Length: 327
Image 1 (cartoon, rainbow, N blue to C red):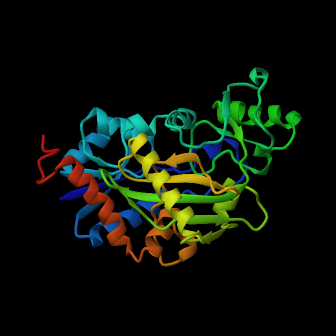
Image 2: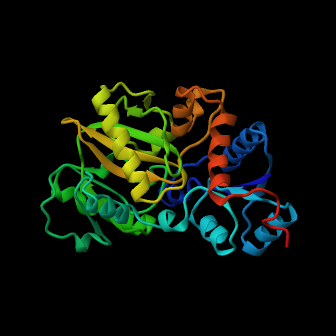
Image 3: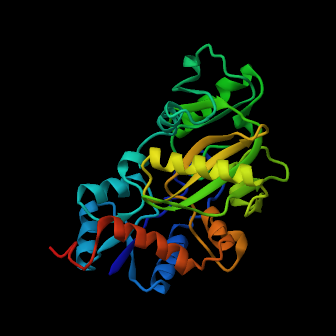
């Protein structure tokens, strides 16, 4: 069984590069190399596959390398490519990856699970009259890694809202999702599997000074990680049950991470689901991805963790031999 590990330059930081005036470290190769190493340690043949500007060149390399399945910890365009050519891959499909945060929230609300009230706006001139309670939180309707998020994205007064909406719509080029800012504990839940996903130890993110998870705090490690989070049995069970329901409703595949706010009344509010979910596990704990911390708390090695995810994808596709890309 041969696994091709996709990587593409700046794939983690594309949105942030549009608005940042500082040098941004590109960890795409390092992350992919760690994944490849873990996959090899799990007993698979594995190689790195760099995404090419011409998709035909990427396809040629996949065929020449006789890749059975692709480990795609990258982004939407790669998922679309893999689905178009019918190539098995690890992770969720285009039906979820291409869905906006707003559409996911609507679907979760339809199933009567708690998520902050919100609206989406394409320009500050289009901000509607609304009944949302302040403070509000504003973020790009798409994206990852807290791109476009800073302290000013928490809105305490109506006059602050247009500026932040314009920052997102003009500099990032996306619609802005405006939602109620729920006070509580910021938690994130990792899941592995498909029909009966396994919930990893729950992680809580605490900040020394910040009140939300900004891009800068993620990159500068200005956050305190608690994993497993200190929760009552009732809180833990409610969070896990909610996370499993969300995972199934949104049709996540193989792995995902779900961000929530545990409100002061004990209600876990859905914020977003991450299909590219921070899987790295390294010897320096400060450099783990969030799901890497969870796997470590579950006493899993990187090989066990990443290998489990790959095996779930193989089982889902029912791959038994190297006959996928032979022609």
